[in-house]
Amino acid sequence: METRVDMSTNNSAQPSSLAGVAAARVREPGTAPLGSGLEARGVHAWFGSHHALENVSLDFAAGTVTALIGPSGCGKSTFIRTLNRMHEFIPSAAMAGEVLLDGKDIYAPGTDVTRVRLQIGMVFQKPNPFPSMTIGENVLAGLKLAQIKAEKNKDDLLEECLTRAGLWTEVKDRLGAHAGGLSGGQQQRLCIARSLAVNPKVLLMDEPCSALDPGSTLRIEDTISQLSKTMTIVIVTHNMQQAARVSDYTAFFLADGGPGQMVEVGPTNEMFSRPKDERTENYVSGRFG
Amino acid sequence: MTHHETVYPKRPWKATKSDLIPVIGLLVLAAVVDYAVVAVTPMKGKLAYAFLFFVFGAGFQMALKWKQLGRRAAVDSLAGSVAISGAALAFIPVASLLITAVTKGLKGLYPGFFIHDMSVANYQSPLNQGGVLPAIVGTLYLIVIATLISLPLSLLTALYLTEIKGKASGFIQFLIQAMSGIPSVVAGVFIYSAFLLTTSLRGSTIMGALALSILMIPTVTRTAQEVLLLVPRDLREAGLALGATQWKTVATIVVPAARNGLITAVILGVARIAGETAPLLFTIGVSNKVNLNPLSGGQASLPIYIWGGLGDGSETGINRAWSAILVLLIIVLTLFVIARVFGTRKVKTK
Image 1 (cartoon, one colour):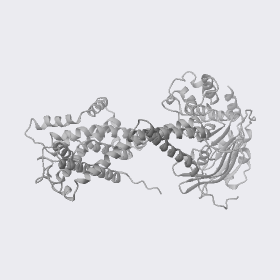
Image 2 (cartoon, rainbow over the protein chains, first blue to last red; image 1 turned 180 degrees about the vertical axis):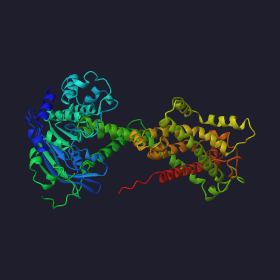
Image 3 (cartoon, each protein chain N blue to C red; image 1 turned 90 degrees about the vertical axis):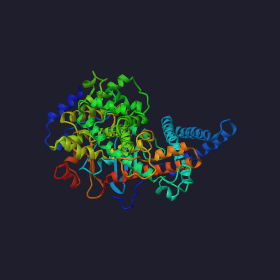
């Protein structure tokens, strides 16, 4: 099992600092044709009259993992939800700016929003498998919901998605069981498998490990590393170790009394070893936040 | 940094004016085609207009969505049209009923209608004599007393079923289910045979309220049970983990959390009984004067007054009945508004 190898490499390196963790991370370049990635340009977000996010411009190159870090309430989650048009479900929500997927603004008039969300998948903070469906049905639910035909045999797709999510060996004998019987970590990996089945170009993960034990967290981090070969990943996390372990780029968000802003973005090892902004330095070294 | 220019919040997901032009255009086209089709085919009448308008309207919108975004969006548009049509279909009879009640009811309404009794008038008297004051008082009495009897019983039953989950739960659940199927006249007959036939008691407000309670209890219990089940288990556990007893947890956390739903339960219960006539026929006796004693003496009520007026068959009787219907509607509506206004907790945001 490939995933196990990755884990032991990480553990045996025993890096002493976050910068060490980030530097020790070896990534092979992506191989799949990935499109040109996702670009946020001058994104603002409001809840009613409350300006929650101000002027964030950030590129997510295809096949990279970008971690969004920052204290609670700095607009990370709001930002990630503007990236696949989930922000607009909040009744008083408003936004400004552009989000380009392969060069096309997903907020342009005439855009099929359901197709945008099909291409930009999302994994939520709390595992949310569909309770009325079995494990197998959960994985394939996206095909049914988005009314698309699988390009390959459904059984193969099921196995592939569960394998990529690192869950196959644990559930292959009980695909017909209900998903509620899985542990929290397994449920979250099931949700990742579910989002993979519709083959998104981008996967947004909003604190996917915040409710999980360290073991499950490591499994999901391995999963992320595997997935980043074939898709673009954006992950919100409060765990800086995690940001250092899984991401190529890190963006630091902060709301300093006013709306949330992006303070700094850069390659992850630089963000943790020699950040340009003093506030980033303070945050990653644990002096506040 | 270049954010000197002010950026304004936008809602790109909302339909713009230019999005709405084809939508409205196609609705107008649907109306025109609708008119033309009704003109040249044997289909006639309001029903044909309405039905064909929905067919053409939904069809054209579907075609528009198909052209703009493809098949999935077209199916989505069709489902939306069906939902709107369904809502309209449900709304039409309700609106028609309200309009009829108001137009017909206003004829017999004069200020004295609210303050006079029927001691010197009858259904055939001219419409400027007599009124429904005793019936209003009686109906309010009946609703309030039936609620006072039913609410505690229902709430306690619902709490037993959701919180205590005792051994008898299954049986009680079955009884509640069976009770909700009782025809209302049977509730009246039951009270009549249990209390009035065998004893020296005579029909009175309390007997009517008892009969109404039989109908109200299952409705309120079932609804209360559903809303109590919606309170997350986490909240109960959070209360218990602070060292609270089950009683304290239920009284200070679960019930307040379900408060709005419980008010809905009471409103549904009142709606169930406010217009009931059959259970009152054998139980409240007769009165054409205001009777403020709920324990003895006959009582009047609006449903009985309506029933009497319609049964009388004279023009004035029917007019009086419509006026009483209007008064009953106003009373019920007022009660609901009061329940909502005083029952809804004001949550302060900021």
